[in-house]
Length: 314
Image: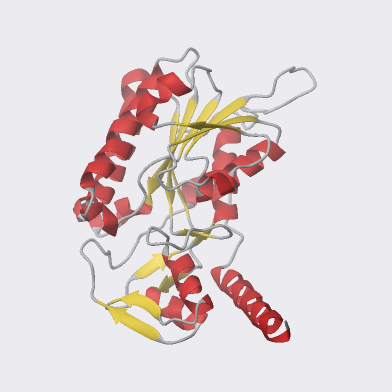
């Protein structure tokens, strides 16, 4: 792993007429929208490429440029040469991937291969930050074969690093751990925290998959964004895990924290029992998680109480 100068990217300066350009694939999604908001605040010019498979125009940030299209066609949609590309735009759900593997191959394998080829053939080539999945570290080497999703994400992470070796492409592979926060989708493709909070808000039992002892690390989206920008600013190459070691819980512990009755559902194929987290590489860059899941849940529960009081009072 090589770490370049901490001032490798300066989005704007008195000497520069134009701000540096960042491309964000999946920029209309949950994490992408938070990242774009912070990039704009730092003075970057930002282009989002999203096919809106899960992204939404409601996540658009004023000041960014949004282009609708598939990552497999990135060369057609992004003729510009950016300084950096944050590649977040992939199929991102574990269990549903067993029902629609063809979508996983198209989004994650075909799309990501096109992104890498596009980056390789730019001159100068942009720094590539790839949003990988912590599922790579589940249950040892067997983790990659749990589902089409885990296989594809691990394969693309390998391909990103291969492009660095083959073509000297400057890359960072960043592993996310169960991201939560404002704007998190709560539909069938949503993640655990959002779905459980939505059930509590609707007065419904909290749906959990048996046995309930599955353990996860959870990371606030603001910590993820800070981590991505820390890597970008330093143009740090290598592999980095972004997660909060202090926020590891079983899914039943999360449900008890949120409160309310639980409805137990049958386990699903591909549901891993645990995850491994080592954030030392990111810490070496100066990154540290700051947010706590318990604080976020408490905040959401207070908001629910206030909403209920308003309804009663109204």
